[in-house]
Image 1 (tube, one colour):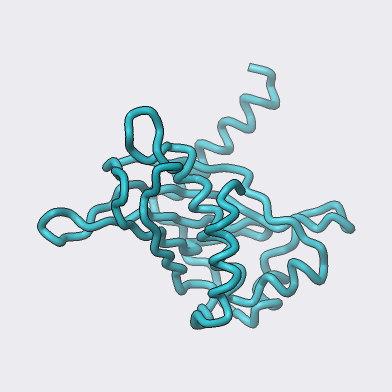
Image 2 (cartoon, helix red, strand yellow):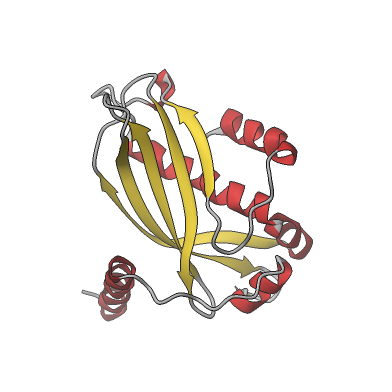
Length: 186
């Protein structure tokens, strides 16, 4: 996390923002492209997208109340896989939003979608980037990942995971293939 001022702002404004109904309501955060977000091509640096998505996941934890359990149990949020598709560049001073939502889950991890949205010249919505991440909470004391059922109980949610959409199934299959390739030393 290298966006300390944006994180501080998120923490200070959190008490004034409405609670999110977990697990399906999305976090939406508004930003603007500042000079320190740019790369040498004078558009937002590709690494900055990932950092801003960290803030989206943080907002989701804060506004669902999950942060209380994370602090109480000393759990560590972990992203163990991610993929991104850049569609449009974001130039200096351009306003945009990061939308973060949980799509589905297994026994020990969640798949979240991040969409970076802006407005076109015609006022229509533009998707600048879309990312999928597989994330979990790691219990340092238990040296294991927190079961998603426990995570859901901590935030008072009782829901079954939806079936993964085709793009999520492909993402998960790709991650399985990479894990197998790494295990075999290829």
